[in-house]
Figure (cartoon, rainbow, N blue to C red):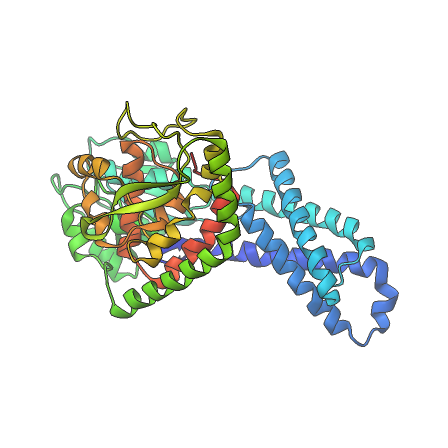
Length: 464
């Protein structure tokens, strides 16, 4: 397993990516070689030709990433997969055609286009179907033992089972007698005793054991676990394993003691200063670049519905201080006169026709660059919520107030992993991702979130 930003990713995912790079390179090379084999045999500059394929590989894989084709959590059908790959390659080739006008060394000639396109689709679809088969049949998955079959163990098992590319498979569940039959749901072996745990791990080549016990009555497995540890087997505490597996912290299940004694929640001065410097630079750049677009959006809002162009609303920021967030107005002016503060619904009738488009493309958020520049918000952080909802959620959701230990953001870890929230249950799910972000806050994680936000916006995911 590879660990980035305190989250696990299977090694085979990296091998898949590198293998695909090789297949794309091979596809372009075969297309070139088919038409120019005689020239290539005598070309003393062949190294430049080979090097010229590398930018093509990069641009194609970038397009595949932004078409969400490196997400293998759910199995995709062959037809759907083929269509999405064709779309990604088409976008990449359009970009390459434009770049080729400026940099002819990319050797994107029109006579190799169709052959290269055919080979790319053939190789990429086949490569992905093979990878999906590997994931679906648990090939090269790391086998683990799960100790306990209560609520925490069930959540860990469900996270592994629902994610096709988790990289793990539960080989066996060890627990006290009389518990729920979690093992049957996971297709694992069930043992209603801790005796023989270490012997089983040794015999089956188990390298990781996850201890997901929420209570200690009925016996403790400390002796067999200690034996396993002495034999080099890694022992993971359930809450910590769930964090690195899912990229979130289970708010309703995690005890305060775990948050207190776990690593993370560091606030180095250099991190805080660099984050603020990045906010100023990104917000200033965003205001300058988006100025023509914001002008056009403002005109669109004005001519499509009566009322002001901008909309200000009270939100709760760092240390629970309220501020006025600035947005382009996307609802009719009297949207909350009768209803008061309510969650936005899917296909909400209060949203104007232009506002629906702006929300889908997230363009209504552009004026918040000013909030970032003023220091009320950060570019990356938990989304700021309205005071009316904050008071309700603090009463009903554990640790909800901890969101306000950092500045709220235009985008965040919850936004790229969960999407729009319009209910208390959605707020809980997003809180779990926000807690993970607060615990693992860093400038590198912020950069990753910003890059992934671009993909989210392009895919128009999670807006209402």
